[in-house]
Image 1 (tube, rainbow, N blue to C red):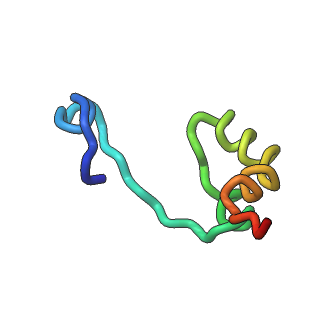
Image 2: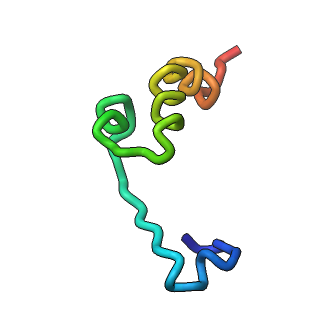
Length: 59
């Protein structure tokens, strides 16, 4: 997490951040315990729209 700023990154008592790589797609996202839970619900609900938003349009 280079480029991270803010005191939460520099004060050891504030916890840590672990990055986990997951498979791209719903099969990779579903088993992950995302926090807050509303983020996971949003991704599950809007999966098709999110993929459309990042997929280049050939037109």
